Image (tube, rainbow, N blue to C red; front, side, top):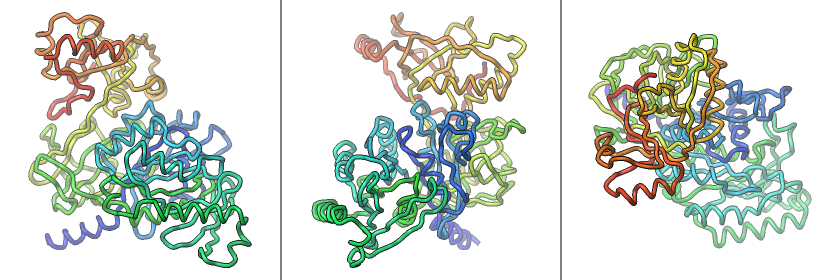
Length: 542
């Protein structure tokens, strides 16, 4: 029986691929996601993200606010089959105010796809997210988007990635022309040129004409100057560019580069085919029991995201669980590492943005949605058999702080419930004044849009109108050693001491200079920009 299970797990792992897409806002991430689903047969017509009422909304943007504004502000999980592989695509928020949600999603990914706008190249948010991928040693696949618009030369873009990110590049396919002159891409794997015709806004799969590189008809299909320019550039990158090295890709030292246009479907299918061959399959995860292989027979997984009210009719709360080992089966009873309780996993769901269907089983690399009756928190481990706990997911330093007030006392119950559930799902960090007389929660966010989303959702999902009072602080640091370490220092100026949801001391500074000044005056006080990971302790309520 054990040998049969091991063989079943091995087969399941072999056919699974799991990745997150990261990019700067407006690089076309949600559009690329839609096109991958289109080629995977998961949808039949792709809806681009534009704030236009007449257009279909993108499958991955399900929140009302996303559909109104034409932006992505939540992470969703999209699962589909393609060429006998099961793909788990973790769609992350493109907006930089939601980078923390992206950090958490990357904890559940085995690979990352970095999307770059051909005209803009590397942008601040892309660099920031790249650092998180590097921290986790994720393989990074680069898709250079919007080749059908004027942009920078492919060689210049590759050079920028090498110089700024310190990693080698390998162009798996190479574009012919750009903007109005964009004629298609050359696939270096098959030595074939793929000439594309524009389809209606890229809603359907692109028509594809394939010509061998040495075919005498090429010059009739391509303008002579364009063809010779492409040949010269190809000769250059094949002469002095890096050799393809799959180990370097898996170690995050080399990024395979793909050129195309998600909006018009150029290069999307070529990317998907290569990705299946090159991507890392589900691998080991570090736990208190050491490295856990995906073929370890006992089921285990961790919660990397919580989402309240995906279905407003049912006021539901869903925990997103990455399966790490063993086989998940519906109605199985598992242990909850943080609380020591046992939990029956009934109604597990396969996720497809807001659409869900009940599943019977899942394997390592899959992401499942579990109904969360207030049991799960981000970073929680669930397991069967011997106790183990995976590394938690840290909180990063917020940059914006505001008291959140509920002006209507009759709505206090809904206010408390809404704040508690939004904190649970990581929509925002919640802190409290160290002064017990001030009971209003302090919202701690990375950016302004996070604050707006919290107020919008409290009104929309919980029926509570709120006001915010901004605080003049931009830097948060957790105090190593807790309240005792802080008391030893005595009175501190230009700083506000607050407590997080686990009652740990956090110092808020007006700016980075104030923070450095305090550390210079009190070198014995150890401060951290990342919150310590919590195990075995529940957060406090308002």
